[in-house]
Length: 150
Length: 397
Image 1 (tube, rainbow over the protein chains, first blue to last red):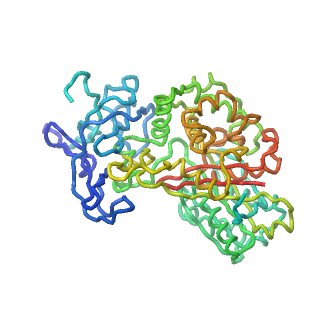
Image 2: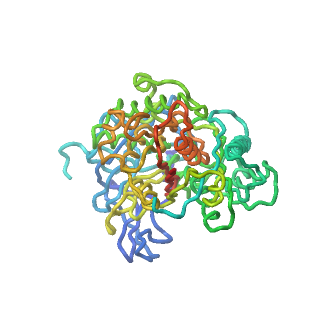
Image 3: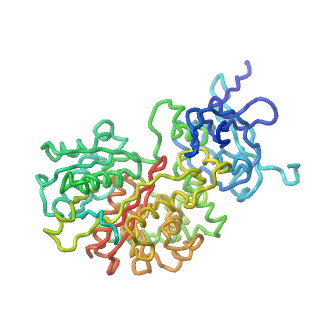
């Protein structure tokens, strides 16, 4: 049986190549403000009339702002990956350089009991769900091992 | 009150909250007729109708103003329909106020009603990968309680809040709701009951999170001049805040994936939820110390604690002390959600902000049997609609 094709679950929100995946945001050419998901029409800075944006890879590391989990299976368009449903954790993560907070699932195996505000996490790309032909990918956060180089 | 842009509340009415399974039109019309009776007016006296829309009832829901007018009997009155998610009711109220203050009409009717499905609120159907409200379910599995839980956990991490603190909010609101004939849940709840209920999104349990309900609420409003011919001291709408956030919004908000960036523009003096009530206080010319009671949007128990601070009822990080000391219970320093709140009602989206004003009106008239805040002369509501719709109303007498 041929291997499934790995495709992003959403187009253009993150890189999938290489060992160091990153979220793809934009930076306004006029005022320099960051945005995620990418800005394409107008800059949200009220003092800026910029209409052109550079794609930028956002910081791959951040700090946990808050966290929770889903103990009940979310309704569609969420696609369940196990039956019975297994809870998974979600974290809101602060990126220092961009000064914004981004949501993401935690990788499987990390529960709310493992998390505290201020912990360091890094971005990985992991399977969100699969069908017969495709493996759909999404970004997730993973705790940085204590003592690992920054 | 320094504000001379005031209107009067002549009548209020509600259809009891529940899971009745009937058309939202029925709830809205029952509420409207109750408000008309309360005002001592008839449908003939109404010149303007503002309807708060529901998006789960198809075409007649999207055009609620005309739908309610037709159900009451078409007579060529002017009409408006509006949608701002949970803030829809405040927007409809604001539209009616503008008509009255502009002198375009004397008497207006505001109606909101909803019929809700069971379980989690879900996004509008179909494949809609450009809609963040669709994508957050698809890519994250982030339900509404996910966001409520992120705020709750933040209180635990910053201020040492506990699950028992959150449970105290439910215990208080359930007790308040016991005496409210329009409440869906009229049953005392203990801390143990809350702690024994299953976790939905850690740290929030089933009894920490508000249900979704059917219900309808209505207001009959008029100019002060019209009202004074009937009542020397009518209940007044002293302020309506419908503000958006100021950029950059640095608190993650449903249904977004991220906050704005503060890398270029510093965060505003007041974060969004602080700004909602502030704009209402400023418009009314009063402050938190002048407030006798509040109706706040307790989508979760923990969120009610956030609102205490957002409304200036206490300093940041002190909300847990308020609930522990009983300050926000009826009989306390500044009762919050004497109606029983969403904890006792469940959420009927387009009706909810209107229901908050109904409760304040009954309280200021001294008609809130079994849950009366003694001697109340000013109250505030606060709520927030998806995508940046602030909603806060100050009612005074």
